Amino acid sequence: MKSFIKIFAVTLFLVACSNNPPPTSTMIIPAGDVDYVESDIELPKVSETYPEIHFSDKAPINLNVSKIDIVSKFKPTFRDPNVEHLMPVPLESGALNWAKDRLKATNPDSKLNFRFIVWDASVKEDDIKASKMFARDKSQYTARIDVALQAIGTDGDIVAETTAVSWRKVTVPSDISIAEREAVWYDLEKRVLHDFDSKIIDGINQYMIDYVVMDTTNDN
Image (cartoon, rainbow, N blue to C red):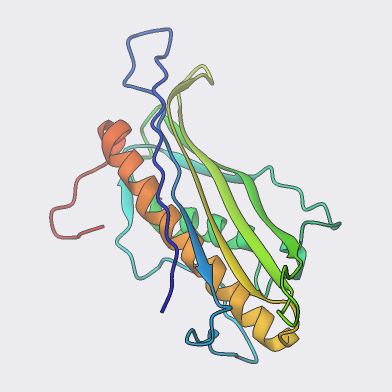
């Protein structure tokens, strides 16, 4: 079975300009390709319904803050090449569910708040024409998530921030059925959200650990 997985990581450090806060930003970018075109690779299992993607099976991340604001700035275009509005479940909702399921404010007396922002939750389609006679045309889908997690001080300034971008690609024959395509899309969403979960946790542990209430009884 052929597979093509590529992992890229880029780390960006930003230093806040007052009160010597902790390092403010990390960007971690994983990427991967999955090719379902080869005859020895089975398409994901087709289902009549697809549940929203949640992370309630993961241990919560308890934060020493009074409130967590969860917002999305992403706006679907509803035009080619974007197809995120056709997904079985919105990729955006998976990212928002991550914050709702995993981030927990534990200190109502804290002067700090956290803010989770979804900047991008897009899925784009590219048509790949066959280069050989009798070969099948292909469709390539790229799912991308871009989020920021910010600690907000009493004056409204960002005192710490970690950002994460994750994306994956999948290639399928263009003539697969609608049901098969939805199964591929859902599998793609789960894969990119799994990548995102792993990488944003790395960013929190490395750059925002001062705000985490440690719980030795649970693992991330």
